[in-house]
Amino acid sequence: MISIAERDEAKTLGEITYFEAPSLKALDLVNHAFCTRIRGVRRGMYSSLNLAGGKGEEQTRIHLNRKLVAKTFRIGPAQLITMDQIHGDRIWIIDKPLPPSVPSLNCRYDALLTDQREIAIGVLTADCVPIMLVDPNHTVIGIIHAGWRGTFLGITRKAIHKMIHHFGIAPEGLLVAIGPSIGECCYEVDEDVMALFRSSGWNWQSFSRPRGGKKWTVNLAQANIEQMKDLGVRDENCCWMRICTACNHDIFFSSRAQGTRTGRQISFIQLRDSIDTA
Image 1 (cartoon, rainbow, N blue to C red):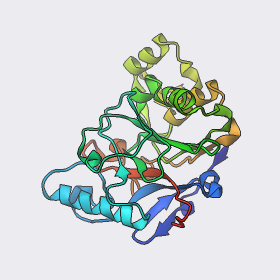
Image 2: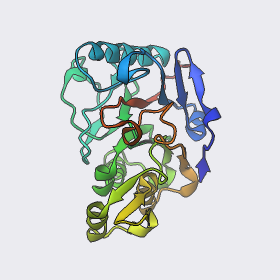
Image 3: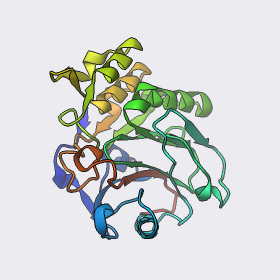
C-alpha cells in the first residue's frame, strides 16, 4: 500500500496549503486536494481555512474561504458542491448538469458520485475520513465522508456498489485516495461502539485494539479499506495518507484534539476539462 508519512509532503498554491495523492496526480485526469487549516481568513476559534460552523460574522469568513478555495483551484464559484453531512449512508449521484440553485439546496448526504466535469465535489472533516474514488476507464469520481457511524453503515461499500451498478465501473480498476484523518493512535471508543460493530458481523479485531478500561482504539481508515477490498478493489490501487489529524491539529482541524466546536477543512475532487491546466 502506498503511504504518505511525512508532513513535508504538503504543497502550497497561492494562499492554500494542501496534500494530494501521487496516484491521482499522475493520472492528469482530476483536480484534487486534501486541504489543511493553514492560512485562509484568520480570526477567532475558527481561524484559518475553515469551511464550516459558526454563525453571523463567521459565516461571512466561511463564505470568503470557500471563494478562496474555488479561485485557487480554478473552480467556478457555484461549482464547488459540498453536503450537509449527517454521519449516515446517503449517497447523491450527480449524472447530469446541476441548476444554479443547487448550492442553496439542503443536500443531506455523506457521499457524492459524478461523471460531470463542470463540478467539484467535496467533503468537510475534522477527524473523519475523506475518501476519493476515481475510475479512469469510465471517467467517474466519488468522494466520501466516513466517521464511525458512516463506516458502521458501510458507506464506502455502498458508494462503490452504486458506482458499479449506475456507471458500470469495475472495482479492480478503481483508484482510491484516503486523506488525513484521525489515526488509531488517537481515536478511542467505548464498549457500546465495540458491541455494535461486533453484533453486526464486523471483524472488529482487524481494525481495533483493546486499550483497557473497556476502551478500544479504532483505525477508521483501515475499516473502510476492508470494505473496498471485499468488493475487489486492489490493495496497490489504494493511496493512504497516514497523517493523523489529532496529532497534527496545528495544521488540521480536529474534534478530538480541539473540541466539537472546531472548524472543518475541505477535501475535493473534480474531473478536469481537456483545457484545464490547474
